[in-house]
Length: 115
Length: 111
Image (cartoon, rainbow over all chains, first blue to last red; front, side, top):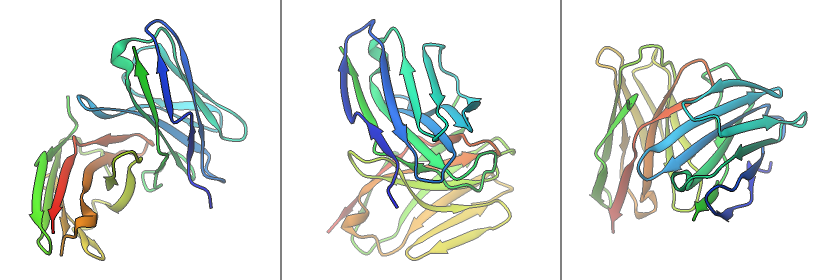
């Protein structure tokens, strides 16, 4: 069974630009969560999508948004990029949502560098 | 505010030794406590997880000890191997699918 895939793996953007990251969950998984990983703040939850609906949201500004498609694939968008947005963006999928017993499987991440 | 506090930040252990990483939390709504292992350039991978109705869970060389009254849990890696050298994250989760992570422990196992 293929794991969680994320594209692109690396991305370089300049301040003010916007970026879209993509995540394909494990087949059969309907929940997709996004996390930001930085050396200073560690791993922080961005948001979770389940059945094309955002169910949970972390404490990030509105410049960070996402969506989920009917095939469970998800995209994350960051508008008006700031230097501080440089991070590893991780996507995790799980079978369902709303239960704390669902293991979340992480993808390899997209390394975003903002210049 | 860090919802899950993890220590130590880094740990050096001799091959064959025991590695111990500790975590503490405040939110009693947390009901699932996983540990993740992350190698450079990779995403975190689930190592072992525990629910608060169990005080200990063992899988191979990895054991979680859970103290509900103290709101603390720890990871023990027995017979540590150089291949265990990685960053370890504890985490906690409520019914929602959002994990609150500790700050990570960089483990180095010396041959």
